[in-house]
Length: 247
Image (tube, rainbow, N blue to C red; front, side, top):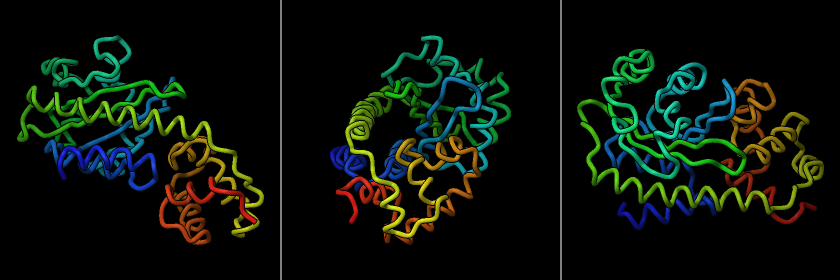
């Protein structure tokens, strides 16, 4: 995939033709990264969710959200102004390597997951979340060079714009008639509530947090809803319920 193809792929997410997970996988491969992550940070502790990812297993993601996000020196740099919004930076320019390697975060999460170097950028979303694109990679892959940081900045600019368009589109769509949708597709009350949560949050993980329910429980509900609506993905499901009202 060339640069132009990847940029088109980024905007296809807005149109529901692709997903952020697919974009993360393309970026991970292009930059020889161990992981590619788009992480949403809320205002308080425990309000961290991985918006999409490529590379890390579910256990590593959960451990990061539950504990390590709170001691992540890169997140601290985001809040202090050392790591300004909109600018992609090499990790060692944000947190010096000596400081990183002396941290609990490095010894207990970064290094055990095979990571040493990183690069990324962050922005503020419409709903007040801080969104971080992080591209950590192994010691063997080596540090990012200026040309790579510049290239990642170009992609990040388009990711930022696509996220803004996505937020704008969500704010303009009509509110679905969930009662009619539930009746049409014979959804249970729990399944209908999941639809409402997905429209409100845009994420199954955020929906689980909002409802204070198990992620695996909501994932089972989602599989049932996909089957009843004859859709194949969450993005296809969202397009279905936001189109003209059902009969």
